[in-house]
Image 1 (tube, protein in one colour):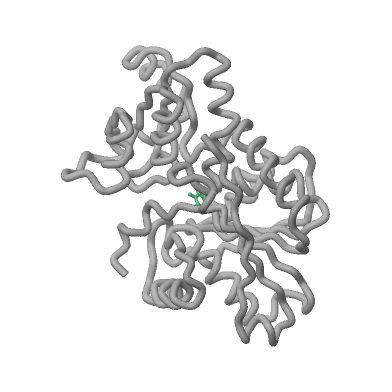
Image 2 (cartoon, rainbow, N blue to C red):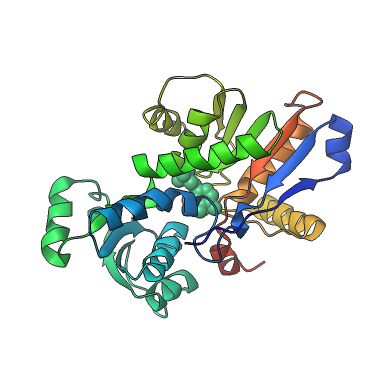
Length: 293
Ligand SMILES: *Cc1c(COP(=O)(O)O)cnc(C)c1O
């Protein structure tokens, strides 16, 4: 799991200039060819723990396009471990690019119906899996647990040390990455952009991971574009334009929605002139080719 240093780029546009804002993008999508973005940080301490406990198999959950499954498969093969991916839904052949990659890295794919998948946190379901597959190190769906948050906290320390900024923006799925950021960046404002519809529950979800309650963060829930993995023409047009202007790819599931949200908030004068905004490119580009635009 070699970590490559990642560039920080400043995004320039007349809109930003007129608003007196500096927008920086941390290209964490470039930290590893396969275990990219926040997934590298979320897996780091989980992998250490799995090794420390003497496990030779990782088991985790995800949808058919999951960045987390993809990263876990890559990490397991890099560390010489076995991996089992519990995939939500029915098997579809030929495998899509995400699952084909997982399989190529030796991940054993097990499909579970949406009904059964809902029990993924249920201890008795985990026991059933243990009798079926033997001992494994369990990583929850999306990779969020205490050790994932520890990894995100370490990333936050690095950002704090290296970059001068007032506001942090990042996309949110489970909220694990954001919780780690909040725990460390006490002097900054933190804005998460929910990639899911009905993201209000994320506030409580995040609160439960915080080392102490703070008020310096919020979640924007109106940039979901119809829900997780969904998009519309406005988001597609924005993504194409952004990628052309800055020559940086975005992942329509997460980072494109955040970027759209940031520019929309700027248009609505939501940020104080003079602010330095740091946005996190959390990776996820493995799924980009699945979108035909
Ligand atoms: C998984 C993922 C997220 C969401 O991270 P959480 O910690 O679950 O909130 C954001 N961006 C990308 C690209 C991801 O793959």
